[in-house]
Length: 595
Image (tube, rainbow, N blue to C red; front, side, top):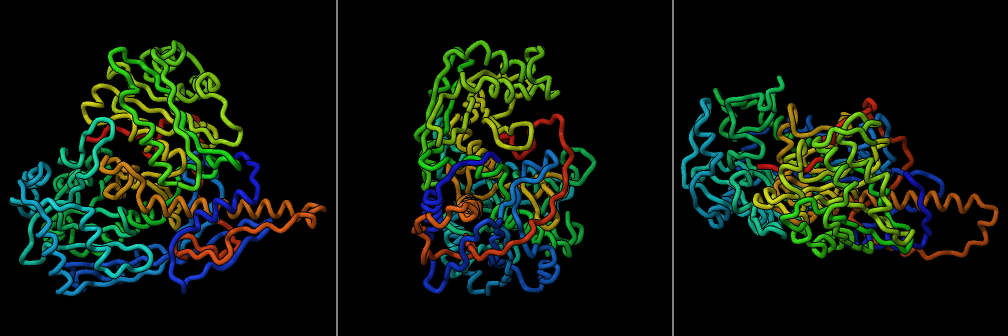
């Protein structure tokens, strides 16, 4: 990572903003700076697991707990794709689990609430598709209830007593005599450019889980659905993609039965897998895709999102389908301790050299160019615009950090081999450091609901460090995974409030995004402070430095969010991935159209 010249005062100003999180008077911030050391900040994180509608005999407590991690140490995920470790994040989470079963009275009130807010309607397309399966154990009969997911999250958050830490709620309505087939919906946000409401219009956006809107809670209901997103409506085919491996997914609760899709004895383990590989690894304590500190501005600088609109379709204007004020407002809300700029330059029409590079990258122009050094034409996006950076990104203040975005307003035909791709946040093809953002929109895409704004926010979220909620890293096992094969069920992580999912139901960064980013930056800035202080103290003139009030005295923070109780330790070993001489973006990067 490129070294930056920070003043200690500037670092601590930002830290004082990060630490501005309300906390009870009994909680204290202990520890402090350790000049010259790389500190691992250890945090005890309570994880509450609440079962509603499940009998205690339904869950084998030890089998469930045996699936869960004791600790988590996040890594920067992308450098290992090149066989090298990322920067030591300086974080380690120690989990404290609390399992509870709600009593009959709580369950009665909760399910009455669900019935009260639910809207009756016909079974969804995918519930009907489940009925058409050969091996389904029952048919979903209408009318079914369409229940607002954020309202359920809010109800649970208020009525579970606001426990410390994070909460996973497992819901099972099916065992009760008042059971209604149901799905969850989120229909309160439309695409800001097209006005298309994915949550209202698409059967594939009817869900079984949700969380992270205004709480640190995520609920998961196997008595809902069946649904499209995790394909748990399909109980006939084990291998959905035909690659020879089972795509492991959790079926509806009634399929955990003799003759059903899953043996009943697997339920405890399955819910444990969801808790670990979705709730903990992907939502509550995730690893960043890219190093967030690479994009930190220097003292007095701003974070800048600079969009070059490359007009490759004479029949439309890309500038009609992007709202830069919307982009800026999302990031200002997400990281309010930085100054933000969002700027747009329209290349109308696209210049000849950029168009040539675009045609090469989409395999419509079979010519040699800089991509040859990387053995794949897809590299043309990166190498051309990197070599010609000064032609597209103007000089800003040296203290600013500039994220360069190349937005192609094009046609379906001109997308060539990249048809279906909305955008990706590329790396530098050397060591896994973020480089540029590339995104695409066409009239066909817009007729499906997609403008440029959401893609810009989503991909910039990756560029600044955030992962999808459906792919990530398991610290104790030491591997990166996405939603396929053994972890197909990881798609359920998308059923959470974040613009980083593929469901297009949220236009903002959620509670889990905020918690994770604040922890990444807290530990990073404190260790930069340690490095800077170590350099100062090593200087023979160190005694001449005047005392600086750091603004952190008596700061109160929730220890399971950003505790600074630190200890030096060796970071956990990471598996070595082979160096890749060429590759296409992994699922962590690409933002495709999703039906």
